[in-house]
Length: 433
Image 1 (cartoon, helix red, strand yellow):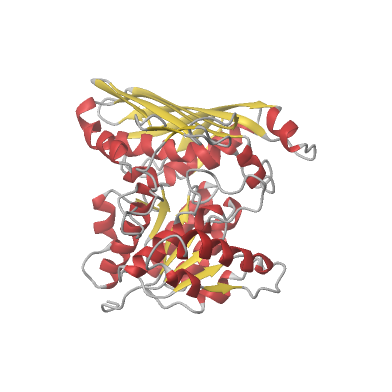
Image 2 (cartoon, rainbow, N blue to C red; image 1 turned 90 degrees about the vertical axis):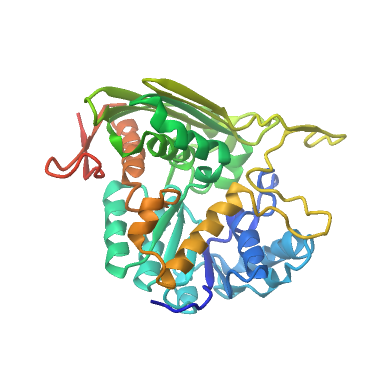
């Protein structure tokens, strides 16, 4: 037991999702203009839910601009949010690049503190491992890691250090998606899932340093709906085969790069197996980052079909629209259910009910309860709202299988399970067929 000490919070990665800092002409995406993590932690501190805050990034020379961004977008916009100016940043401002600066920040933390990791996909593993070995609870951006092997290793590290490691799948906290999960049992065995998620080409400016190199659009966007599909289907269904296809040409042209191939759109077609009778289901997940600028930054929808019924959700169409005399964005479909950035009439931040906020708050709540000895890791697993590292290996397996398929001319990839383990267990390996 850690006692009732209020946790400190470490943020690793000082980019768009954490601070709203984007060093491109387009700037931060319109659905997260002030970031998500730092503003949430600052409000949680205002409410007495966390104590000290730290921020680590690989590029120290950007930190003055990052602090300016947080000051103008958070401290000066809302009452009572001045503590964002006191966040201690790592490395020093004169450091051009230090890939391990997060270790300096870890040294400031105590066992039981919480960490968020929003960095390029290929850096998640080393950072998460180091944090857990320091007995810190970890919330890592999706995808947790890029390979099943690394995912299974993180499960082991979390077990050895008795800490919580979760993947930040905030869509689980969207009230419509949560309700869809809760209704899933009444729809019978899993039969069909089709999801599309697209973002405009301007996002490629933000991600141009790693797009097509260290990760792809499927890892970045498909991960959300693969998790939702697995969440609704539950442990009575499991993925068994994946085949992937890609469209190409527009991203390379937009970024004017020829040193690598960047997929514009990736579709993963997945076969699922149902425990009750061995019947089959199909999951189709499509993600793209070459969409035009439109009324919603992220166009996203899914259709879930069980053998006894179906559910459809169009998350970009909430029936809430705004038109303005604004050349940059004259018309928009709004989604304050994600993050509400408009201050309340009293001048305070009032986005506590947004699912982007709630995802982080819930993680902090659960970690505090674990530290206080009120709940165990098994309790968190049974609650089922947070995506624990232990229960989400199948999502990583599907994503890696998709990459493996693409790299092998769209050959099929089998997800291998331990035949002696229960049906509900996670996959242990991948195999081309």
